[in-house]
Image 1 (cartoon, helix red, strand yellow):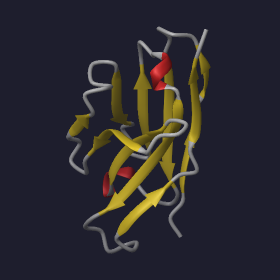
Image 2 (tube, one colour):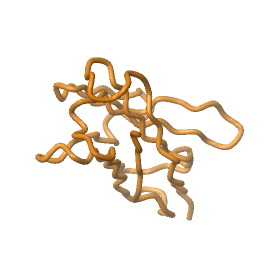
Image 3 (cartoon, helix red, strand yellow):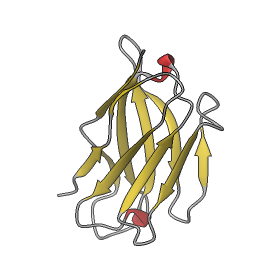
Length: 121
């Protein structure tokens, strides 16, 4: 069974930084399209950033230039470095692993439990 586990959320002041981490149990993350999504109170979940199996990255306009998605060299963990945080970045952040090609595990989307990020003074 594929498990996605996030960590690194917390409370930060406006203008501050946080780094979120995401690991997929028993897998290297380069098997998947790895994405970060977020859901603010009363709003729908929205996409923030993705990194493809080959390492191509893409960002929502709302986070472009402030957030960076990356993988470690061992390809076991994906990170979301969040800089210049704003109160409107406050949300539960979810990591998604999308298996498009591998036959090692069932194809489809796997989600983590979410980690709270609060930006407030």
